[in-house]
Structure formats: structure tokens, C-alpha cells
Amino acid sequence: MIVVPFALGLIKAAIDLSQGIDTLGIITFYISLQVEMGFVFEELSETIINCYELKAIKKKLISIFKKLDDRKLIEKFSKLTLSNIVIQYPKTNLEIKIDNLIINENDKVSITGQSGQGKTSITNLILGNIELYKGQVLIDDKSLKDFKLDIGTVSQEVELFNMSIKDNLCLDKKISDEEIIKYIKELELDEILLFKNGIHTVVGEKGLKISTGQKRRINILRSYLMNKAIYILDEPTSNLDKHTEEVVVNFILKYFKNKTLIIVTHNEKIKEICNKFYKLEDHKLVETSKS
Image (cartoon, rainbow, N blue to C red; front, side, top):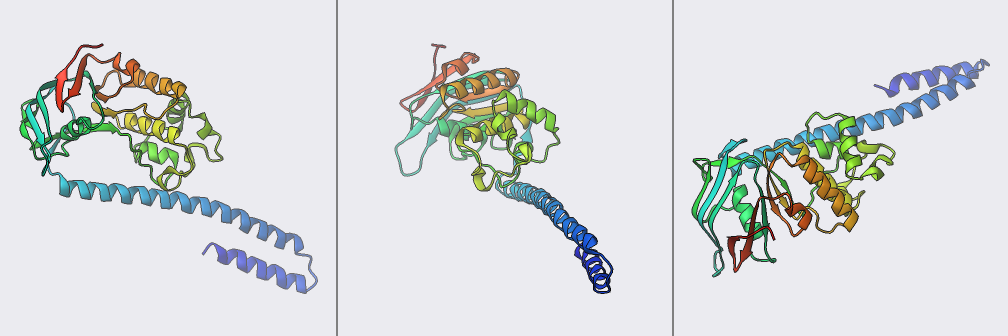
């Protein structure tokens, strides 16, 4: 439908030209306009495709998680209690034990331990991803088997969609460009603003257009913009250089200070904000001092 008027205009101009009427300027104008409109509609089409792709991804995720997990969601809580927990992996003798772990609202909990001790298992248990365990997990007085917490996560694996940087950050939430740019500058992601389309640049499959360090900072910002009451931060500063690590730590200290945090980290500066400290030793979670 868009092309037809241009085609008719060009035909009319060509007929007039054959009859000795000077229409070269008109023909040039039509061709230039068609080219310009082509660019406009190409960008418009890309925006529409991204919008539908985001909605499709969101719809699919909701559908999948409804099938996998029909527990009732709790957005706010006062106390999370894990008591007499034993996680045992099938066909192995490995057991991960938690005698008692209490996380109150706004607590900042540090969990450390060598690789393979069970840090990921504990966070997966809190997320509700582990069903087979002994003991009791309570959200206030409600069992984790029937209820789940609305938890934001910053994982070591960063998954970006083939959409714009802003769409990856907002995930369908309405947030202004100005607010996003403010956070981007605080995380020293100014390189993004140098892209031709800035925060509207499409990052490609799995974010191939941006670096690992940029992805990690985008992941932290995306989690913060989800605005959850409780977060699990899994080594949020891993694989970052010293300066970038400090930038990320300062962002967490500033913007996550009123959140409940469960932090798997060895970064001493992040641990400074924590009020509870735990370590996995021989696959058992034990409370330790700040040092």
C-alpha cells in the first residue's frame, strides 16, 4: 500500500517526460522520498518486531512457570527461616546441611565457601528450585512447599535477548530514557550512549554486540529495576577489573541498601554492608564473625 502511490507518481512523471514536460526533478524527488521512507519503515518494522518478540517471550515464560510452579507468590515478608535442612543428591553420598538460618526483612546476609561446597544449592533452595530436601523452610509461617518469594536474582550467567538495551533493561516496565541513562552513567556504561541508537541499540543474540563486563553491569541494573523486596546476588563482581568492580560495589551499596540481600561473594567491600555472615565448611552452613 505504501509503494503504490510512489509507483503511480513515477509512472505519471515518466509519461509527462515522454511528452516533453520537464519532470526530472519530480522523478528525483519521488525516488529520494521512497528511499528515505524505506529507512523509516525499516526502523519502524524493527521496533514492532522487537515489541512483539518481547511480548511473546514474556507470554511464553509466564506459561512455562505456571506449569512448573503453581505455588502462591509472596512479595513481602518479615522472616525467612531454614531449619534442620538436609539436601541430598540422588545416587551420591553428598549432603548439604543447614541447622538454622534466619533472614529477617532488610537483612544483608553474606554466604561464602569454596567451590563445590553447596552455595548454589542453598540459593536454589531459597528460590524454590529444589523440591527434595529434609527439614523446613518457612516464609513467616507459610511453607515454601506451598508459597514462594518474589525474588530478584543477579546470577553469574547473563541472558540478554535480541532486543534493544532499553527493552532488555525494562522487560516491559515503563521507565523513561532519562532515568535509564542516569543509572547507565553511574555504572560507567557511557560507551553504550556512543552507539548510533544509544540505549535503543539492538544487542543481538545473547548480547553479542556488547562486552562481558557491560553485560554484567546491565544484568545488575536490570535486576534493580525489577524492584523486588529481596535479592540473591551470586558473585556480582566476578570477572570484573578492579575499577569496574568498585563501580558495581558502589552501585549496590547505594541502590540495594533498603533491600533484603543474600550475597554469595568474596568481595570484602560488599561484605561490609552485611549484618549476618555464613560460611560453608564440609558442606555445612555455619555462622561466622564479620572477619
